[in-house]
Image 1 (cartoon, rainbow, N blue to C red):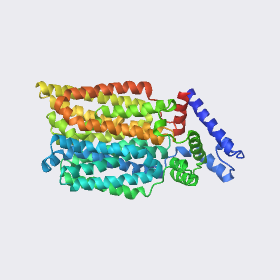
Image 2: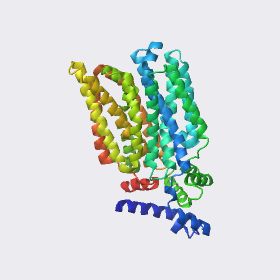
Image 3: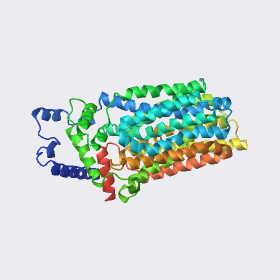
Image 4: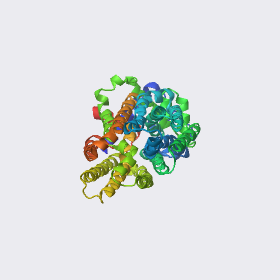
Length: 497
């Protein structure tokens, strides 16, 4: 606690020194962050001293609209499981061809991730989400109308590019607009809505033909485009671009018309000015000692998230159930029923338990689930306890997906959006997002081959990765719950010094 207070004071002193140099005649700034206060402004401050912690209807609505893009992402992830039997039958695809189709979403995500940070920096957070939907809408239409594997893969690739851009810009946008005491829960809603999309497609994929399923995925993308016109741009992005008037207008809209936003606006502006002392960092300049700690955390969490096998388990859940002798229609329906309430629970408790605790609990549950699947498929290969294999398979797949939804699925994106200062957010965020999608593609493409080769060994490796993740989180990942973005940046600056 004492260390946190000293860091906050250090950040405040830096902010004040910059403000004093640029605005030496603002006598009142040292006390309140206001300049030339009127009696009305003084009254507003007294009534709304905690204004930056206020959660308004605009913040709720903006967050909901933003995470609707994550719902589209979940629809894309859940599509490959429910559509597998129909597509392979109608278009006569081999295992290798369907593995390419399933994994090409993550390959497209990798392409989108490479440009995600730069596009979000140039276009802004809101217009980048509109840009994402152009790819998603086109991709769904191409899949729905596909007559061969080529068109199918092209549509899936376009959808992946949109999803890859979404994966960066949505958590960043929410982290930049949400008050600090609910930032974790609001960014975690990104994972909640993604699970809603997966759950929907797991359920209706048992009843709808795959072309109609693609049309269902097209509809929320169109609705998302319409809603994006009614939310404000990120105040921090506007401040970074020197658009102070628009920044204050957006911040006022987010915090409420009766709230004095001067202190928060000044803090944002001063922090950006401090980060711009070194200028905008290029990718080559990112690998410096001062950025090593947050970069290790961001890249490490994304690397471990994918090597836990999470994408493969989600994309090919039907294949896992079938291999273990459990009815896939029942299994996917059970997953869909449970994973949304579990993600909702994660959204509620993330700002109560904290990032570290929830991450380690999630990894522990994923590791145990993967170990159970390893034992289950081991029994199946040797013909031991055939009556228990389907039960173990159901519990293992269900536990792995639910545990992932509870923590490891969404929390690395929350932390990624929190730990990087504005001057390196583009390059660092791009690198972290690329890491996620690169290893996601490797896992999803090789998953079916490894499943046929040695399913038990594959899941044993996944369980060991989850065990190592607990050690990594315990020793390296700091708790960011309840801290503003500016306080978190001060924390990492002091860790280097």
